[in-house]
Length: 287
Image (cartoon, rainbow, N blue to C red; front, side, top):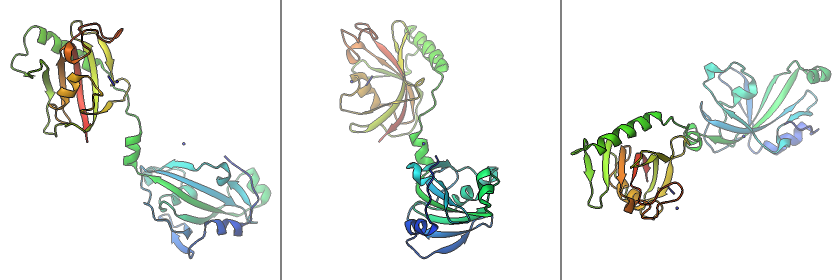
């Protein structure tokens, strides 16, 4: 159609604080009552459940030596926050992420965990320094994540039945017929805006050869709608014309004569010569 570990280092706590601290230290408490100190105040958004937080952290022992260094890895840790009531491991490092905003640096004390390294060092408490470098809102994540592939079986059954009705002349009066020979059947028609030339359009489609009903391509199984700029010749002429008559949010079937598709030659080996085409389309966006 379209032409997100560990590095070991021995660094004094004073040098770590120099790395993070640019403002006066301020004491705060998490919702669970854990005291923490803000070393640097950021300017970005505060993380919320559903958001992705990227952060660095270092853990110091009782002798102010680094025993865990996420900074040394060169890549931030990533954590997608869930609703607090669903958190089972309420570790101070995790729970403080619900309090911090993008750009914040904080220090929090916590009991030494029961691990071989901690017992050998005879640590009672640990200090963790956390730096939040990025907060990605859940809405942005939804836009970035690929859409889950859809089953095309219900669409296939619908298109097969509609094509049979078309061939039997049962759709008379239900089609929008345009002078070019293009015909449009609306499965669901909304009051959304009509796409216009220059719009960035996003469409899901399922395309078959009109004479045989054979599927030649579809975007639904890939979970990736086609995107193009209307009026730039990036899609076949039948699509250019049809999109201007299908409101955003609508679902329709387009009957396209071969002259408005791939012409006399077709598009071997997928589209035969002089092939009229039928497309089921879902117009998702036009901006």
